[in-house]
Structure formats: structure tokens, C-alpha cells
Image (cartoon, rainbow, N blue to C red):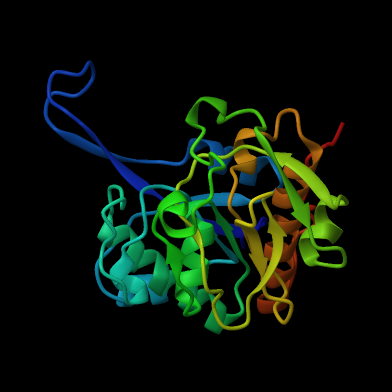
Length: 265
């Protein structure tokens, strides 16, 4: 019997070219070490999910999971929300976009907790029928810089959080300083989703569903802030607790392990 919630983490695939030390030929591997570390720290067991074509695998694996963590990565495929590619659209991993969309929809149907981060935040919105700004500056006219890659591990702008939201209850603040490495953003929100945080220029920074035990996503990368930021740790703790509760509700007996076990400072 599993003693901790099993949490699937979607992954991007990295290609190691021939000639790199340790790689005799072209090698592909899945990478989400930071997210896996955060799940373990909060009391869960992570499993990496490869992007697989078709619905069968995505729907089947959801039945085995207690939670789904949708990671960041490349731009989302605009075909998923009925738009043609914008000239400012970046690299698109269309297989990852399709797989994650099916995975999220299956998780929502099954009542499995969902936590989206950066690109995963955008995928949650698309999976619920929403749309995206394919490039914030080009689509909204905002002059605020959101793609600040050199500050991945430290905050670079603030976000205002809606009082009374689930996000507010988790982090205990109505204003946070966050990191920012994106150029796309939520436009029209998907069905059942509400905006619970915005950047100073109005960019959507968090969405959630109030009618579900845990369906929440953020535009920033809390996994890169956990070492020094208590609200970031609280996000992972709350998600893993929700996954633990889901596991208990679907199994005859619950393990004594306490989910959400990280120690805050």
C-alpha cells in the first residue's frame, strides 16, 4: 500500500547531442528535478509523466494518481484555443501541450487535485476553454517586462492577491514578490476559473476553481523560491495535503505519514 500521495509531474524532454560526456549517441531525458524535490519535501512521492500522443495514457494514468502538477516549458500551442500563431509566438512543443490538456481535463473530471506552474498555469486555463495572450507586449500593449530569465531564483515584481481566495488562504498574504520568466499570459479565463492574482499591469498571475478541493495555478515559479520564501513552500504543502486527502478518500486505509511536512522558517 502506498504510504504517501502519488503526484504526477508533467515534463519537457531534453535532447543530449552526441559528443556530450556520458552520452554516446543522441539521448532524450525527462527533467523536472526542482518540482520533484518540492513534492518530496512537502510529503509526496513524485512520478515524472512523459508526453504521450493520444488520450488513452493520459486518462489511464490519472486513475493511478493522487495529484497532477503541470509544469512550465515552451509556449502553448495556439491551436488548442482556436487561434492562429502570432508572429511573436515562441517555440511550441505541441505534443506536450496536447498531452497536458487531456491530462488536466481528465484530472478535473476525476476530482484529482491540479496545481499548474507558469506554462502549466496557462494550460489549465486552455483546458477549461480559456485563451491566451500569445505575447503580452504585442497583445496588450503592456511595457512591463515579464520575461526576466536572469532572476529565476529571486523575485522581480509584485502580485496583488484577491482577499478570501484559496491562494490568499494558503500564502497568508495579499501581496507577494515573485519571479517571472514568461511572455504569454491568460487572456479569457476558462469555464469555472476565477482570477485570484494580478501583476501591476493587470496580467493574470493566478487562477483557481472554488468548487474543487484543489485546482489552482500560478504564473510564477515557486519551486525556484522555496529555499528562502515561506509562501512558496506553503503552496506545495497545501497541494500535497490536498493530494493526501484525495488518496485517503479513495483508499480503504490511510497511512500515518503526514503530507505537507516541510518546515517553515
